Length: 116
Image (cartoon, rainbow, N blue to C red):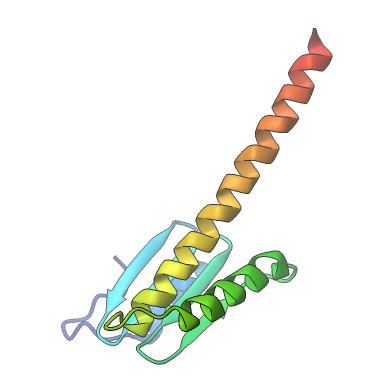
């Protein structure tokens, strides 16, 4: 794992790892969780979430914001903010992946029908 210091704290090299990372990663540091799952990079702390997305990723950001707002209303007592955000981020990304798989299947079916 990149950036593991003896103290387990977030270091600048961790942020650089997010920026240049091509492999999926979930790094836990003291006071922060770093998420690198294409197309999203995020730093989640106990009181804030910093999300880095490429231009044009609004189709992902809007559902994430909506999901976060809903979960704030239905907030479970005792559930830490950072885990709530991590859960919402993972659900949003898995929904995006499921949608892409569905689109690929539809396209593959269309291509196979045209080959017959």
